[in-house]
Image 1 (cartoon, rainbow, N blue to C red):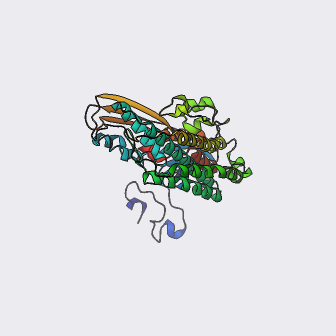
Image 2 (cartoon, rainbow, N blue to C red):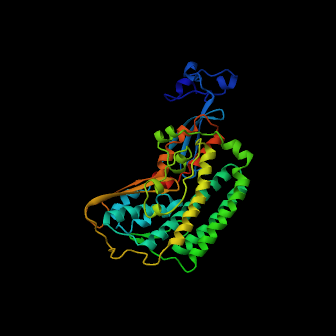
Image 3 (cartoon, rainbow, N blue to C red):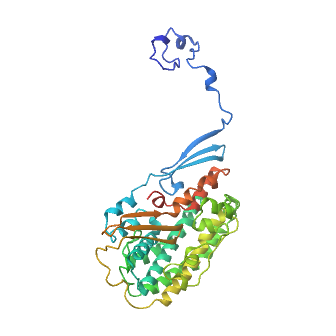
Length: 407
């Protein structure tokens, strides 16, 4: 077989030569493509690797096409869409009550209470429903417990990404005690479907508030040990301080959300600056950082656990008796034509729900605003110039939940 016998477009590597040809005699085969076309580019040291979409460091089904210059990240292209489930289209074929079963599953499933809450706020605004006082307190308590469990998951997983396995186990041990409290009142451990239009579905079981006090206090009492083990550890300081810094102006420009925004020193929290529910009645601080680096983003979440505990204790002390669900909420609501928007501060930042009614039994349109979507968009700006090992920690401090990104 000779070169002329090869199909058009085939590159001859010499393997096709017969025993009497170039391969048999040791003579180099003739190249079909000029050698100049194989010239290496100037940045030959750069190469692409895929991190994800199935990788523990991405915290979900997210693909990062990473260009490396040695160990440093020279470019990052974030690919999303692997978890899209058409939430906003599905709700157009469900009644207003049925939507709650979707909002805590198809969005930020680590903060399901907050997703149900923001939808209920929008729907209640659309229908003019007033929530009873006791239901507002119960929403507040379960929402802040859910914030603590989400932050414990975030900082604990960051310890695991950094090699601090013991810290990860400690955080999950504490988280488990609070998840059990949410299971007691809602019957579920992750996707609760506890909130209802006009209130909540179940009242607190006997002795539940006392167990909440005890459980939250036990977590707060353990935090100094967590700080000694991880947050004040020299190795963590070396791997986090000065890594992926973010200035306040840059944070505002690229749309940072929640703890990522507050880590730069901007004291913005919807619970205080645009109060919803009954947050304006409670006393709590807004933790902020100074440099917006990996360390500050972790520290803000760690301190927010303490502030959430303050809110929980105040809500329990002031909780009145009375109904937990508004009266005369129809089984098939048909709100007048109109629109409503509600927003709240989830563990990952501002989430919002925009509802449009055409007077029917189903939402005419819903638009969901996810905090993780905006934070993930910042990853290229936060990661270029840092090492591959830094990249994993940077993603961890963004704390994305891909259900909140893709919806």
